[in-house]
Length: 262
Image 1 (cartoon, rainbow, N blue to C red):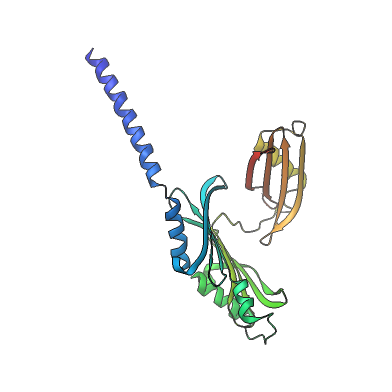
Image 2: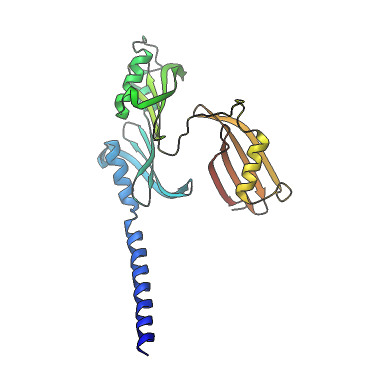
């Protein structure tokens, strides 16, 4: 009898400990208000400077996140993705275009900034040195008739930064940061990477389906942030699969499954 009592006691204690661990893990998750505060603090914007803020829970690459979006009273837009688990900022972007065009017109002024200066401005804002990054894309472009420099680079830990910088004033018109697994473009020895059929097969394998099982499958080649990707969609009964596959490596970089009829 004593042994049985001890066994029950141990079982109860293990249950209590498991429940306690689960409660601790849940307690570690941040609230919606904390996510908003994290975004505002990072942006250096106070509550009295914003005209609108909204947040919602979502899933990004299998991870639960808060999507926080807000506008300042001078029409600058910020978007953040923040981990629900620990409050880490996974991505953010800033768009000052409305404010910029409001104060600078259509950009008919004289170009005073060169590409090297634009790269310097972007690196300084990101808190990086030239030797710490690899530039994936740089050059001048036109946005609504105004000249801007596009500067894109990534770090050794695969964080990606994208900037648009006014060629007239050096003002940062927009920027974007993404810590979600930027991969340097790689190709096979032949240089062709993964074929469309290979991408199709990878998606079907991920879904646990064969081509004969599905109602519809489509895959097409596209470009995203300077690299080739395959975008695709599968319909299987009530389910819809959407995906992106790295065309160089065959790695699935985005995967989403939802009901077709919701």
